[in-house]
Amino acid sequence: MSRIGKKQYALSAKVSAELKEGQVIVIGPKGTLEFPLDPAFGLRFEDSLVGIEITAVNSKRKDIKALFGLYGALLGNAVKGVSDGFSKKLNLVGVGYKAQIQGDKLILAIGYSHPVEFIIPSFLKVECPDQTTIVIHGMSKYEVGQFAANVRVVRPPEPYKGKGILYEGEKVRRKAGKSGKK
Image 1 (cartoon, rainbow, N blue to C red):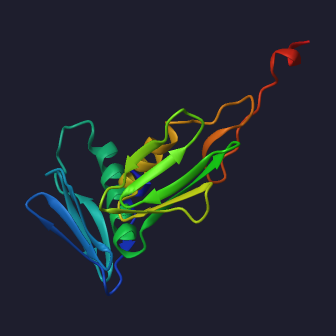
Image 2: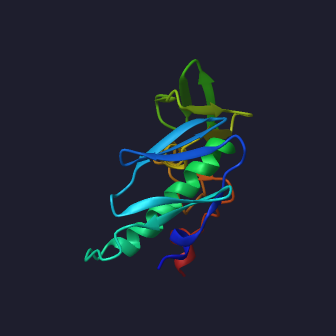
């Protein structure tokens, strides 16, 4: 069995979880997150802990073990998201690269002949503490990561000069140019 599936997550006084009509609903101070749960699984409550349990013991399905880990991870991310939230930090590396927020748009000047604009979804909070840093906050780990990936794909880091949009702490493996071949 999956170690992640067996893991139990602590529910604080402000966080609650319930299973209603095949949907797991987690409510906390930052909002509500929900995800579908396969009928072969259920929620297990012990004191202030919640976890996933397999309810269909005699199931012949081969994907039960994989789904056990998946639903355990989704539950853990939902509990953390509604209580603390998630964030990703992007750094713009390059001469003249800058980011700014105007209204509900993130505007990037990253070496193209035109600025690149992203509409910020209502469930995310995006801020630019300085011109070369973008910080994305939200409840859903998936939504935060997906928005960060969409921004990063516009100008991924390149290995020759190291320019591009990088995640915080990411190292670009540099290559020698044509003259480094000798």
